[in-house]
Image (cartoon, rainbow over all chains, first blue to last red; front, side):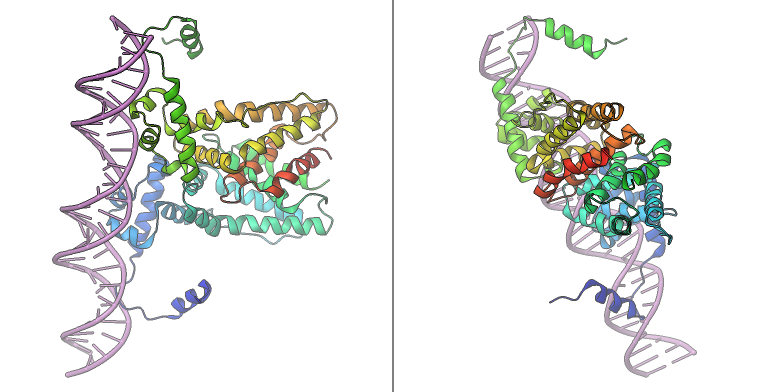
Length: 205
Length: 205
DNA sequence: TCTATAATACGATACGCATTGTTTTTAACA
DNA sequence: TGTTAAAAACAATGCGTATCGTATTATAGA
């Protein structure tokens, strides 16, 4: 039997002493920076590890040592940006919570960022590993809370009943990703402004 | 100045007499057949024109001559199947029409077929041409009618008002593609059975 | 305190490899 | 004569690994 991942992490965190040369924070940042910059000019499908290494002025091996795939690099590059941290404010009502979380998700998926996620989704279609990565590092924290709040609202009477919670979640979140995958326009101003309200309108009533 | 594409098509269609060796229907079918078979074993991302040519026993050039990309081949292979033809039955009510169209779309996107479309969506993320192809050959005929029927139902009182039609469409269709892109399970039995009803429940009041 | 040693990370380079898309050439057919 | 088709040659790319010399750290021992 293997240890749960959390336990392993704990052990590693506990080990204060670390022999050997420590990982270079400078390289790490250079790699993520280069990735971000390259991804403004090209889709993830055209990005290569080699190109990242060249632009970041690091060895290819350094990248391979720390990331299993270019999608993983892109994911970290995406996450390590101001504005994509998922801050969930505590709210009084489930309605408010859902609305806030949708707004937050929309912010994170707009413009350039959306294109990165779209690329990762694309990559995930022929690579289950990337699909897991997408769920673990992005979706889990951002979508599950919405599910919980929908459930809460249905139970406390804020939202109408008769709608399957899972399906309701898909109906709220689906359109966001549909937009993200729909090319140039993606999530435009109009959508960003109106969507959360419309979503709530569907849940209530 | 170049002619509009339609004009060119017309000219070619008008030319009843066609000099030279006619295109081989046998090769065409062999190519689409091989593509379908290969796509049951591998994702579109791993499919290569070479592999198709080899399996279909045709030259690579034959494929390149008639299709601009492997996604285009996959799209034709997908469309040329019994069961994906989009038959829109005339119905009395908008509700019924929406339900039928959703059911039809779900049928077309289940199982193996869904994986092909997922692959094409993936491919479309680094290639605008494929995105257009996806819209022109698949989405346009299947999604636009739903929009029209939602609109109709909102106007004739079958559906509640206050919901933006475009957003409503996204809410109905988004979950389908979300499922298709979500890996193994995709559109499962439970979803297929319940979804159309739930969707209508949202539109109605 | 100072020094040696082990451990780890780094950038650079090269390699073998697989693979693909594309072009050219030649043959087949109407 | 014109078009299609097959085969072969071509060009390019990127991947993943291995290796090399060097740099940076912690620990052990003097």
